[in-house]
Length: 163
Image 1 (cartoon, one colour):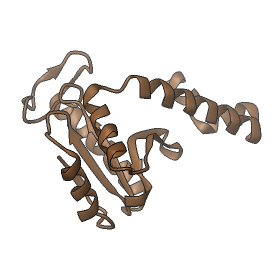
Image 2 (tube, helix red, strand yellow):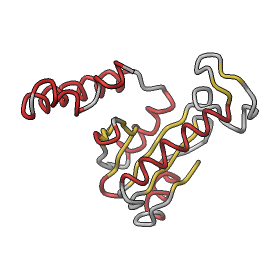
Image 3 (cartoon, one colour):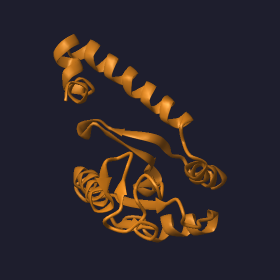
Image 4 (spheres, rainbow, N blue to C red):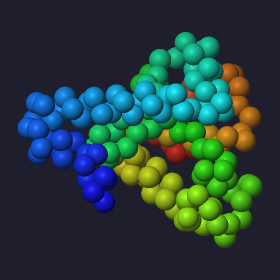
C-alpha cells in the first residue's frame, strides 16, 4: 500500500509542491519508460518494428497519469492504444484453462482475465470511450499489412479488439 501510494502524482505534489512535485513525477515516469523499453519481449518488439516499418509515429510506454497506469503503445494519428499480452503473463485462454493457477501472479486464469478486463475498461472509460484499444496476444501471427489494415479499418470506430 505504501509503495502504491507514493508512486502517484498526488503524493509527489503533496510532498514537494506543485512545480517540484510535477518535475519529480515526470522524472519518475521517464525512468519507468526507459526501464520498460529495455525489458520488452521479442514479441512486443515485433510490434515496434512493424510500426517503424510503416513510418507510423507512436509513443511507447504511454503514461496515463490520472490512472497511474501506462499502455504499451499509443498511436495518435489513429487514436489507438495497442496493448501486448504475453501468453503466460496474461494467461491466454487458448492455452490456459480458467482454473489454471498462475504460480507467479498467485491468481487463477479467471482472476487474471478479470484484472486485465478491468484495466482495459478503466483506460477505455478514461478516454470517454473515444479511443480504439487493440490487444495483441503473443501467439497471434501479425504482419505489417495486417496491422496497417487493422489501424485503417478501425480509425474513429472506438473499439476494443482482441487479436
